[in-house]
Length: 343
Image 1 (cartoon, rainbow, N blue to C red):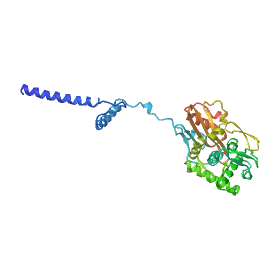
Image 2 (cartoon, helix red, strand yellow):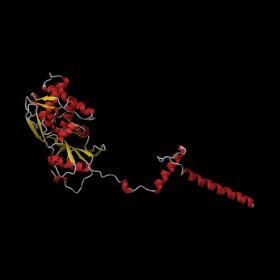
Image 3 (cartoon, rainbow, N blue to C red):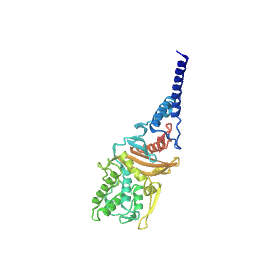
Image 4 (cartoon, helix red, strand yellow):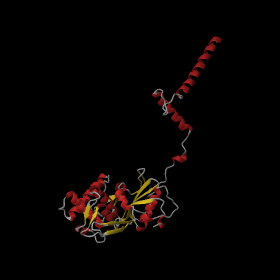
């Protein structure tokens, strides 16, 4: 081979290497916009992005500790039959147990009774107490409103939500139904019509497995729901300033239209627990033999809101399970703490 041919071949080889190397450099150093986007040809950008991503994954394997799953808590985490812990701020269910199992809601029903009353009557609307009191079961929880008296809407809502007055629930039911369907309805007809309004309201909230037949939650085989459905109702209640103004108070004092003063103590003992690092705002407790002890809780801390639901608990577990769920929701759960010595 002559010297001239060797020189030409060497020159060609060097030129090819330079072109290949420079091409790579050129493609990875295109001008960028202020937002960090390549202003070169889109197809080139896509190709480079894919290559860079692959290189990054190869060169920098993911930290195994960051990929670990959050702790999973089983059905034995709480003692009640059905439960939910829900982060209202992030719209996220943190824990659920038998969430779609049919349960009896007992007096947590009254949250939907209150929402229905608010839907159909203004704050100044007057509720008249009458013969519907005869429909209330004798062993019911009572607010002891008097036959012939009258109360503004928020006052009678307090009578129902604070001492869990079944008498107030029936007065609300018949007054709302007669406002909507006519004054000639009998007490029984009015109560039944109101329950239709309640169930329709629940369906609008997305509660598809709920059927309410009484306004107070007193046991009826056909009065049922699920924890998932009650969560939807609880979320609506948590967005009601009227309900929260009532359920956040350990003691409520109101006057009826005749000037008589009524004071009712709230059955939610968490409202006065000063050891809790968060503020409990509501919402409603309940009990029947068939439903067990139930509670829907709502609490806030540092701008974060948590809703808890516990159904069919033993008495000693209702608020203990609730505290455990609230701690879990706020990231405060301590596996070494005995929650069942609290209440």
